Amino acid sequence: MHRLIKPLFWTFLFLGMLLVVDLFFVQVPPIHPAHEAVSSFYKDFRGRLIDLTIGEKKTELKSVEAIIEKQQAAEKKTATAGRADNKQATPAKRTPPAKSQRYIYSDGKGELFFADSLEEVPDKYRGQAQPMGQ
Image 1 (cartoon, rainbow, N blue to C red):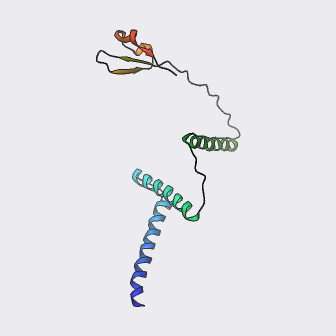
Image 2 (image 1 turned 90 degrees about the horizontal axis):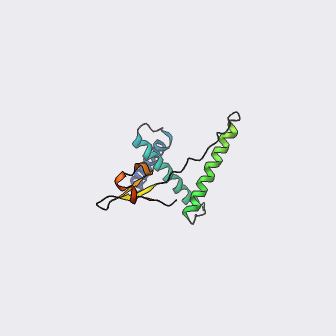
Image 3 (image 1 turned 120 degrees about the vertical axis):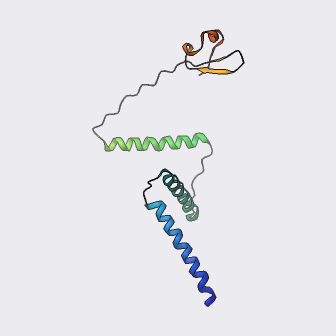
């Protein structure tokens, strides 16, 4: 019996220290950017670990497009929820930004350069500048 007391003591001490560290990263608001980075990593890691241990099966998304669509749907939900809370606010009309034609050209050494408009291309190379495909 005496041989079990020492390992049990150290086990409970270790678990207590883990609990303190867990509470620190979850409960204490971050003050320093490093603390914020470690805290956000730990919260994400902890959430994934809990999901694994509980056995909650998440459907794995098969492609990058599916992940992007899921993220955009979540952003739309939060945007519509924010608008529902703020009934007096009117949604601003967005006009898509005008797309300018980009150009590519090379100098005498063969280096490639990109320009947002034909005016940005030096006069010397304007004749060989080619528009980039959209």
